[in-house]
Length: 327
Image: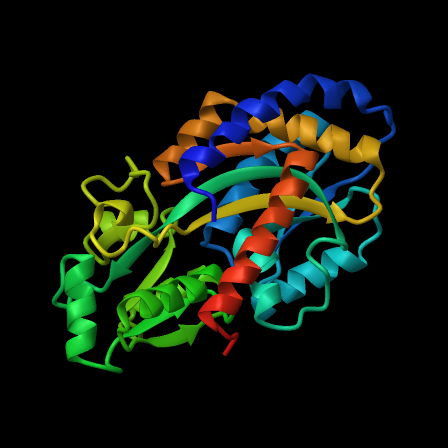
């Protein structure tokens, strides 16, 4: 729940740790085979994009194939449980979306403990959410959307990537702030949610910019606001919620990180985080992220572990106070 401008400072802190982690890596035999990045969402979402942005450069850096394996469903439970059960040898990793890691566990029972069952490796990206509607919905601003929803209670619906996802919580935050009656429709990932939105089966969604940009540019979706206080060059002329009266508290950003099964040897994690840190600091990675409406924000294992724990506690408190449920 920390604003993006504060999260960006982690990049500077993390850089100072790269040399140290590289020096600590003492296992020249690793890797001896291909590495699988298990992604907690379907193709087409930001989690998938984050995994694919590092898979090729990481493969080149390690000298072994790095394969992306999408395991959507269960609000992150399918991917998370697969990595939890995997041998802790560094060959099976989880590319995780923050909603599933620190929000969903407070809303439903999952087959893993998000803190105890995973070893933090590195954070990759941070991205605010963009609130979009179908162009046939007669609103052009967030206040107009709220007014329309109030005038037509129960008529509007919003898509999320699943019960307990950050999109789900964002929708409930909007309901909580505005008392607008909108219906939640969960999907097995952002990709399927956007497909149904484009097909006219739902009216709006709130998600990170990467899977939305092409549809915004072609006019198939209309952006109303960016959640938080940092504008996105990739989505120009769209106001932040911090600048819209009554929505200043709607500050919701997602982060996308790599975790290994608990018990993975430290030298292996050190090698992984060192290489990932170098990749995320390249001009190519940064520019690609920003072009898609995200920011490269590297965190080393300790930073990511501490941040995950803080976010877990913070979102747990919010979910309880707002009385949000996983249904």
